[in-house]
Image 1 (tube, each protein chain N blue to C red):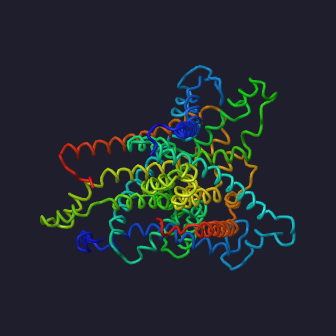
Image 2 (image 1 turned 180 degrees about the vertical axis):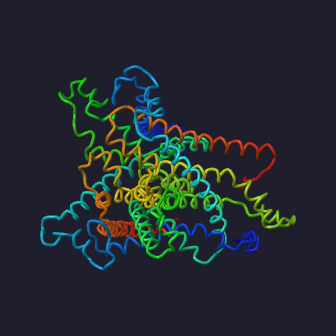
Image 3 (image 1 turned 60 degrees about the vertical axis):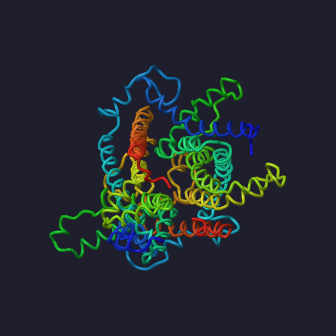
Length: 294
Length: 297
């Protein structure tokens, strides 16, 4: 329709450019400011360039227990990632056929995205408090005596994060299997493959690049999550919670250095995932497979 | 599936494959919501919740709402203020998101370029919201870049104060953080539009604006509705952005819950959560009237 580039194109391209600047501009500013010299403050101008604030952040002397929170968030993120991949893949396969309660389960998962995070977080906190009280009153002594709380990063905290990552995982799985050509499975079966062999050698290799995408989603959503974590983490904070608490008290570029560090982790994960997807695609192409090509 | 039961099942029935997924939502979503409703009817004192039925939390939350009329009580004021933010943020993200999606869908010619530019919009979404919020401080603060420029250019004599920790910065941060939630579903809707419909409209003599108003916008309705639900529910339930960017002075429906939790008053927090949930569902019901979302997913 529009053979030549119209005026509208240039106007819209300029709008898009401004939007990208709006997205990235502020972030670039704090990356730059995190390399402030030792006497620098929270705003421009830069007083020299140094790694002072990164050093302070990681060696200590600046902010308390950042490396602890960093490690906890990393561990939780990896567990969430693995569970998100396995559970979404399994549920994605289930949704390809009819099963009892499929519709209900789908709406519950979507509702979990829409219900405000603070409400879910509060609910999980209440659930575990009631469970604590119940256990203290009714459990056998060897449990009840030592019990302080059942809340923790890998019980209530993990559950809170999964209610956020799994719906995204399921939606991606729907997108994958909508495009999936089931003739590959038929061919495998005709050649005598067992159901498990079909899954292992035909379906999984084809969907693997997208499954890596689900893992990427799971990790980064967990890595940056605050609202659901706020009431459900128990005694320790995750990294973004620490970061949020610090924004009200810290008035030095420590906080920018921390921001730059966590963003670097996010970007590293994105890069690794995209790289892995690219390599897999290339390998599929090189081996002459037409897997995934509809 | 056309391929039949046996083929898809890998020897495991469907309900068993979905069971772990379903259990997570039963234990960490459905049951917690039930507890929120139950606890909202419990009593409490300074130390703990007391499991006896009372409507005390609701009565206190709506304190003065009828007697003070026509003046608004705290609850109504908070909701009116939150709704105002919802509307402003919704309108801005819709206009910006639609324009960006339109450019990507109809003006970028190759699929590769579309992918690349879409990814460029996506990447910030994968980084921390708190960092994206604090990144406005060096720009909008009292000694920030914007003020330095304004004062330097003699536009103003003294630094402008309303740029940060104000309703302005809260709305700005929301638009900054969540426009992507509009771009993605609207872009998806646009990519599904049959290009022949647009050719037909063009051949029938439709101008660019007529094409937009009579062909593209109606066909993008599902995407617009899904994006709207995301943006509206996020702003309704938010407390972090209001905290970080509002300088702790702006009330919001989500923050009321957080404040109560800070004081360990669980039943009133739960009652406020139920009220928030009701308000959110009301908004979705209205949006659902405009577009049947279930049909479009």
